[in-house]
Image (cartoon, rainbow, N blue to C red):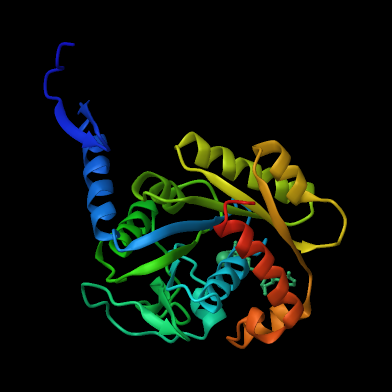
Length: 273
Ligand SMILES: Nc1ncnc2c1ncn2[C@@H]1O[C@H](COP(=O)(O)OP(=O)(O)OP(=O)(O)O)[C@@H](O)[C@H]1O
Ligand SMILES: [Mg+2]
C-alpha cells in the first residue's frame, strides 16, 4: 500500500501503523510512555459512572482496601481531578506544592495520589477548563512513582468527557467497574458510560449496584444491556456516611459490608466466575 505523505510509522503492539494526524501521533506516543512508566503495575481498573453521587468513590475505596486485606499491593488514583474526594474518605492532608516525580502518600498500606494533595481546595476550589484537567491527569499517569503494584484503582469523575476520555485514550487498562444505584436513571447513565468505554476499546468488567434495596434493580439492567457481570449489590447503610465522613474505611468497620465487598472483589479479580 502507498504510504501517505507526512505519515509516521508507529508500533502499536506487534503492528506497525501509519499515523497521519499529529495529535493522534502524540496520543499514541503518550500512551506508549505511560505504558512503560506503569509497567510495574499488574492491573489497572477504573470505577466509573457518568452519574454523580452513585458511590464511585465509596466502591473504589472499599475495593482497594479489600484487595489490601487479601494481601495485594494496591494504589488509588483520584481521577476526579477538579472535584477530588478520595482525601476526604481517607483523611489525607494536603502535602503542599508538587515535587516531581510525584510520590503517592500511603494510607494504611494503600498508596494514594490526588489533586487535593497539592491544591488546598478546601480554601480554593479547583476551577479548571478541560485542557488543564487533562494535563493534571497526564502528570499523574506519567510522573507518579508507584513502584510495583498488583492493582491500581482509579476513582473516576462523573460525566463522559475530559478526564474519563483521557483515561480511556491514554491508559492500557483492564477495564471498568461500573456503579449504579437501583434507579433506572442511574442505570441509564451507567449504560452510557459502558458504551463510551466499549467504543474506545476499553472493557467493562462488571457492575456493582450500590445503595441496593434488596430488589432486582439497576445493576441487572446494566448487566443485561452491556452483557457484563453483576458483581454484587451493596445495601444502603449509615455506616458508609459515618465512616467516610470521619476518614474510616467501611470494610474495616463493619463485618456485613466487609463480606459484601469480599464477594464483589473476588468476582472482579477472578473475571466474574
Ligand atoms: N451503600 C451506601 N449507603 C449509604 N450511603 C452511601 C452508600 N454508598 C455511598 N454512600 C454515600 O453517598 C455519598 C456519595 O457517595 P460517593 O461520594 O462515593 O459517590 P460518587 O459517585 O463518588 O460521587 P461523585 O460523582 O460526586 O464523585 C457519600 O456521602 C457516601 O458516603
Ligand atoms: Mg466520587
